[in-house]
Length: 287
Ligand code: ATR
Image (cartoon, rainbow, N blue to C red; front, top):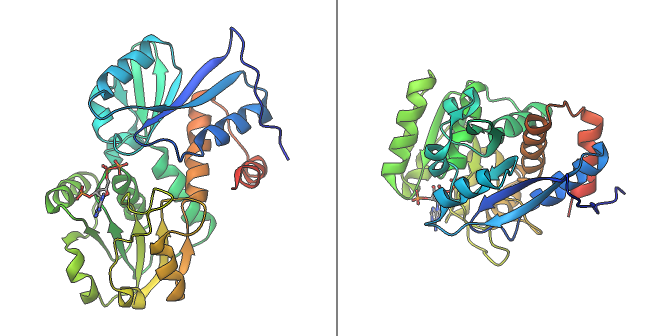
């Protein structure tokens, strides 16, 4: 077991997570545990930002010399306009979850994308001849769509409550990827005949007492091979309970959460975290 306590002094560099809500987050544990392993003098804290305060929060964090921030719901796309520059991953994904302090302002990266790619890569999941169904069209869905396109599936289908947001995501994807991608309504889901990989990216189920799922009919899972919910919380989300009942391969958001954190840590500290240490961190932060 790795000790998780940190000592803060005058040289401690501050990092954090901005979002609303942030109370459920495991990111401080991931980063402070990693800092402990490497002996880095950093502290990583959750920073709740109210919906109208994003610009002030970014400017304030920069003025306070905060060296890096992760960004979560609902700011992953909104935050982009307050940044000095975007790294290639953030530009092609079209969303940002990691900010790095530079002399000119924050630079945005997307480690949801790299972290999720690691999750599918490590598990050797094949996208050949499969349709990828993405539930939701918010910031997280952008990273998921870009990741899915890299694995060359047959088709990507975006399913979202607000069609306009699906169309925005599709138009972004068409600028950067040569992939078949279309929008669909929740009530048309049963019409998909092909084998599917389904990735749940909405905020439904995020709160500990939220027992809802974006999928209303369990019959939807009949052609689903793999179901991934990017949410991670104690106990399974309703979406994964439905998928498990239908005997799909189920993956929760834990590994993605840790890998996106470790990828952000690598960017901030300019180090490489090898797979043994990554595994040790995964085991030590599991709740
Ligand atoms: P993030 O940037 O972190 O992904 P977001 O942009 O707020 O967060 O996106 C949240 C996603 O969850 C959106 O796709 C949202 O759907 P809308 O585009 O229709 O707003 C989806 N979402 C949130 N609550 C939902 C609900 N009750 N039912 C269906 N979709 C929901």
